[in-house]
Image (tube, rainbow, N blue to C red; front, side, top):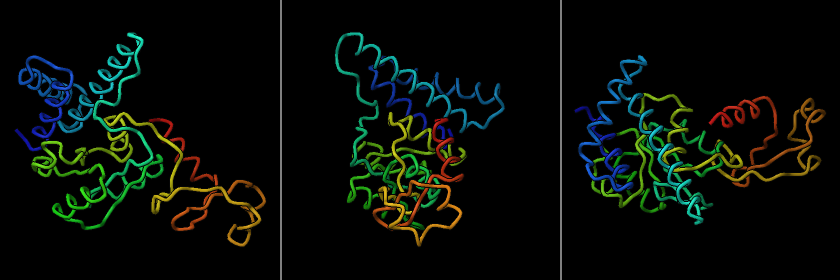
Length: 238
């Protein structure tokens, strides 16, 4: 079994155990076989097939759990992965996920990316910052701290495109896009008075735009221009 298939086998086992399946090993083999067929019929890579099958199953089962609990007149179920969508949620991306970190910030989440960080330092930083580790390294997911859930982590297939990676992370944790943060540093965007930052606004932009935002951390200035519109359009597709 390849490292990627092995990583997804662990994901499917976790999913099955969370729903109290009786035959976890048999169910895991069924998922792996189904992914092989999906890869052949849709002409996609085995890694993409595994990612699609896991995401679809997770979304379907989570939807069933929420409907079941609501139907019983109780509070809606929490995300299966066990992480609450609160303001303290922090992601720590490995060295290969700098682009994903930027898009997580655009989706409204604090995401830290440290270039060239090695595996041991990644784990130490994850524990220190109490962050959810995002990694493309399937071998890292076999480390005891991640395998046993001591440190929360999500494996991100490196074969996925950027927005597919973002959709996978948000879907696996039951999260939705929120108010965007600064894509450069992850700071919160605060609305500022147009006249107070007039000297920093291009003349043409000043004539056509009235809303301006400043990053509370790096002080970079933002406005709802064409680039922003493209970003929000892509996020809405999620």
